Image (tube, rainbow, N blue to C red):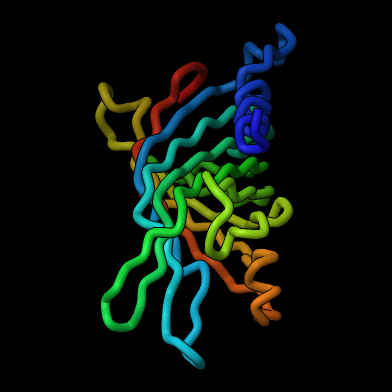
Length: 206
């Protein structure tokens, strides 16, 4: 099994691990599906102007929440997104590099607000999993990267939609692969990711 497969299997095992009875009764499980934009992973304008970008990616998130003192909730989140990565030249030429999966595990603090809003903030670790070693990933993707995230969700004031929420999420991390370092890129790059999704509460209080 490849490293990518082992990490995905471990993440799935963590997400589906059974909880003790009293704790399981309090846990809220939710899942979300949406799309994610990622800012350029690499950029050079000195020798040959180019960007390395990930395409708009589908994003899937699973979360387990444990209520704290109202109105706070602690959440453990698992986020997966996958898309192609390509090199974009100034003249419009696009050269595909690889297919990239990102796996992120986070710890989040959520707070319910008036009028159906919920705000979230958290930290975690993110791992890039390229399907093949090429381009900026030819020497591997590097270690797990710390990230920070914030989000805001809104639940429509409709009884039939009380388990649904529209959510916007933003996260930030630094990015530098071994191949980029070997090419003379000494500073990691700030990567901004924005996702818009629909969140559904599977079990527990919505």
